[in-house]
Length: 203
Length: 434
Image (tube, rainbow over the protein chains, first blue to last red):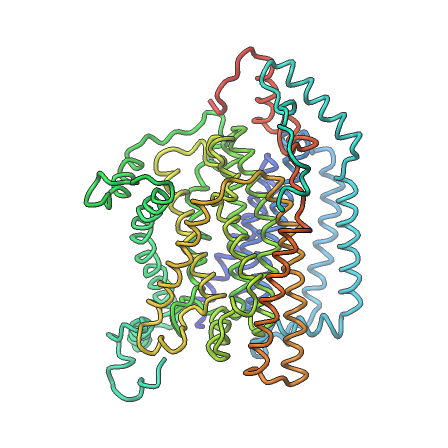
């Protein structure tokens, strides 16, 4: 590809990434911030494409845009006070900014210090195969540790979200009381007709 | 494309309509003679996008008529039959009506995010067509990671639906969005696993590569992995919000779900993209499981894209059929079907695919002998799994959920949820989002 097309793609994607990232900080609404974050992540995916790393680019969209941002939105929806103005966070801005600056300095130091000459070799064609092989052969231990960690997180999430039957009964009762106060029809109290037990319903 | 290609100069010329790539190649070569090469790539991309739009746009208009007509035949009524011959102009009349309608926006809506989704929903809806191979060389982008691209792009549509539901500041829209997000996150798992069987077995992530594998081995994947095909079909129809699984816009429960507050052509855009997605998913089911543009040598005589469109139409009819036949499921039923039935079954078939692939690759089994045996084994396994699900291991549906899920005032600190809570104190219920 000639230089013009590459530069056009690079600079527009860079503007998209950095612009989105700045808007995350500026925007006062948490949901807006997540949507700007999505834009920034899409820009990063595009930058991967200009480096002909299409596997990483697609995975970036799949995981960060399709999954992680949706999870973030879910978390925001389930958090009380999610609607508050982000500028209220001004008290913690000092220490947080300090941490961010330190991380940024470390990253830039690594980026400048690394010898990027190796990248100039021919573009990798079978990236998925190469990544898979190195994950299974060379990096098997971190891969397994990641798998165990994710499983533990999954079990933990289920344990947190799971409600005991007693809790559920109390919750239903409180909801029922709330709804009865409203005078509307109570969906919990609709009586089912007597039916054969549910396990046998299909046979 | 064919063995005949070398016989005459007619084959492969730009007017050879069996492979529309010829025309595109001519234009690219002509530009490359005088222009910079970035112009050629841009023109190719624009031409591909325009070609897709030119096919999809008119097809959607016809499909609205087809879908309504077929559905009404299932329900023993006539369907649209007033506007134009046989009611054929009904979609046009509907579109004109939608364009003329007033564009309303709730006063309390989040203005920027409210206006974006009808436009943004088009992006994945159009992008996804880019990797659908209409012929050996007829896809806008034949990516090495086509399957992943398909999943990634279809995953972003969830975000747009969420934006639409959240920004409307309406409890029904919010519930619809929450349901849509929860459901498509869940059904993405069996969808990925069903595609993983194909990727493992054919050894490629390119969509055209999967079709070529089927052509090379003379077998279509629905015979080898019928359960993956069934799971993909169900998961896709759930992701498409079609009737067995259209809880995110269940009109008898939550008005119209995430697009409750969208009027006029904004609603029309959501509707159009939904139909277009149904069509493209039919195309992908045809490509992955029915051999795509290939049909046991018929692709030598009939243009490959006609074969693909015929298969797509067949799958699309099946989707309309399920929509016209099955009643809507509740969210907990859909979730339990996904996690307790589809995910274990597709996981089982991923393992089966690994074992069979290893038998062919490492043990050197001859594919002409091994594939029929594996097909019979897998079909038997599928039938066994379905029988097991229907008779024994069927997850008992909850007749009365222990608690109301994803409802009530405790969804986040959202304005819509607070409105619900505040309206509880008023004597009569008001219509939301005013």
